[in-house]
Length: 569
Image (cartoon, rainbow, N blue to C red; front, side):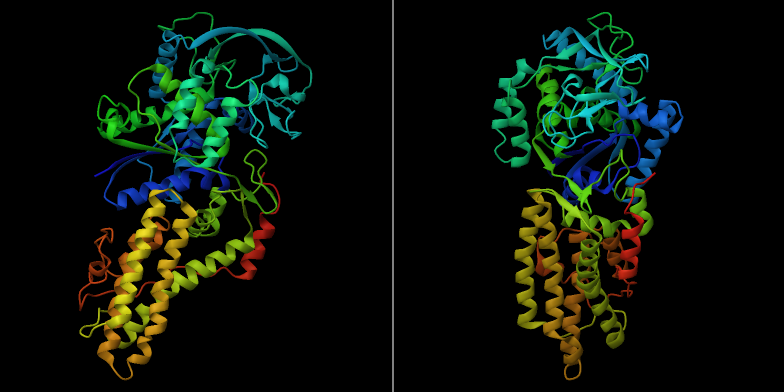
């Protein structure tokens, strides 16, 4: 049994996430976790809400609530929506947990002891109108690199370039909109990333199997311009992990907290600690190579905007500690999913959001479309027309139609039981051979985290069943040889639980319905296809299931297209 640690980028607490957020991290991570569990492997799948930093404060301020109260409420909302999308986290934690506070402070102290944190006096933006220093995300302006007019003080969402507030053209306060800003001196802690450059470079060079998207972004940050720079890891905020704490090897950091991008990835570890305390499990065997984690394969899933922090900053924390922490083995990064000619945007309320999606259709519809169109090699675009076509053709016409045809035919001719006698002949053996080849390819794509290719192969597996039914035509054979028709039906009926097991990582609810309808309890992965298509014996009772997937009508599509054309308020 292999052991897989899986984490997806932890979503900000500032509101409900859109479909682009979902497909960029949590959903493909869930796909991989479900697949590994189905193969009999041990999985620890960790996610959390990212509750510190400017987005939390601004969202709470907008909601008119204390930030701690707001975060608690939104964590519950995000957890409920994650459950609605059947995201199978072993634990969905909170970066504001006591575990993350203690671990973040411990890492900072250790890094200081290793000579990798220094104190820096610097000038920082101060808003006279707001009467406070402005953290990076409290400042917006025009990006000097690409001209995007809503770049933040730490990074441009458009071109992903890392920025400092002083780089922005025409900066303004996000709180008040004031441009009455001035530079004042303040003191902060900096992580000496530059001292780790060669070690990080060598580590990334060793990851020859990583996606080009991941390594190219990391290399750009390492080598473009002046190369990897030291990074401030404290901010002038009240909400977050306090930078001044008992046992801290520095003074004068009162009123400051650790930068959200310093403490947020540490929550992957802290979240596993939270799981352990709640379940009685052992978190160290997942994260400490001196406590059993040396045989763990650790895979991270994230959008491309998160790559720099996971290839450089967080590894600098882990490597810099010189302690036996588990480093990531593979980073699966995704491009952006755009929405109908523009960008999805949480802050601007543009696109379809996770709660809205679940109000329209069950989660499997969304899971299938998003994963089968995952933005792996380039940005992808959601359009209502494409969504309608994909759902109707793939889910309704191929998979749903197969299950409906064979169960209804069998019920009408033989009753709701697996037919007895006969042999399915050469056509059946050819189908078994094709499915064996395709399932091995499907497994290969899933292991390689090639999401779109895996989806395409799964669809081809469904198609093979339809083509077998169409060419074997048991409804015609029944007229002259009912026993032979029954044998054909027996093979096809056994494909239903086989398809359920294979499809469960993508569409878990439909898979459960298929198994329930066939009264099948064995969810063993089909290593031996010939044995799998004989799993339901002659005479085994089944129930003709309801329609698995309804088609999306033109009227529905037009209604949704109109409904989500504007901005969510």
